[in-house]
Image (cartoon, rainbow, N blue to C red; front, side, top):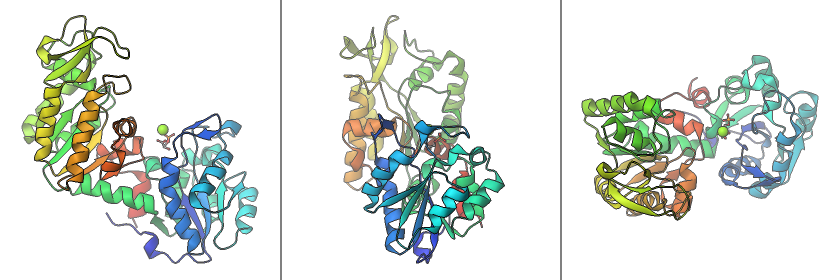
Length: 397
Ligand code: 3PG
Ligand code: MG
């Protein structure tokens, strides 16, 4: 994978369009998780420090091509300015006269945020006319939004093809770590795939099982695998329509020689609520009126055992219902085992996608993994082995 970085650019006095992903969670007008902003700020700061006129582009939420005032990026001006350590101007449109006037007013080292790109239908359509209007605002395009790179939109794909381009520092870090984790990993390689449903991760499971030495299945999706082996999972959440999918993954594993690690013991309860009465049983002894809510200590021991012989790990999805105590124990223990192996220097660990970051934060080990991606869908598509359009646009020339 070869792409330009900020090191390859001469930006002084240039108008640099930076595609960021400011699609952060906001509640009552306040940003509730600023991770993405914090990660992308260094690119903006570095460009401004080097004398560029920095023009930040982003989508926010899903306004579907219309101006939806509640989805304006204006509330992000303050948080972005705090993160970058510079004043940030705002333009009420991302293309057209308002954007052009705001760009023309920029001086070297100044930063401008443009309004939500998805207020225009041309964004999601990847309309060449919209890409052209965006490209007219800049001399150079820098994409720092890995988490939006699975979208082939005007601001991620179209514009990248019209201007000299490069990856920003956050994009560079994502690509470098993802390449080390799955592109050219040091082996043995282990993947953890957890979460509720097999159905949302079919392509991911089928890709990973053929590329790893060990595939560890956790979360409610493990119930579907257990059921596919004829184990009675009682009242547990599972997908009867996907027993075949699970069997196919098991066949792939047998063929490629990958070890498929399913829970051997589980924590079960008769109701799903905090501190519900529960017991730990071997998977063969799940009661008809019980549901699996976490993996048990033997399963974690087996996981830790495999970990000892592993050099690279990718992780997506929790082992149990980690948001409801005490059913977080399995996820927390597994995350701590990975954190310890990483800290000891024997393991490269990369995690991302959906609930994963929240689960690691809950375990208090977010900082102890080698790398934690800020991406949701893009991370999953990357695990599926797909080419991400936003990355493709930077690497193909
Ligand atoms: C995300 O939050 O996952 C990215 O910003 C992409 O947003 P989208 O799923 O609305 O395209
Ligand atoms: Mg999303």
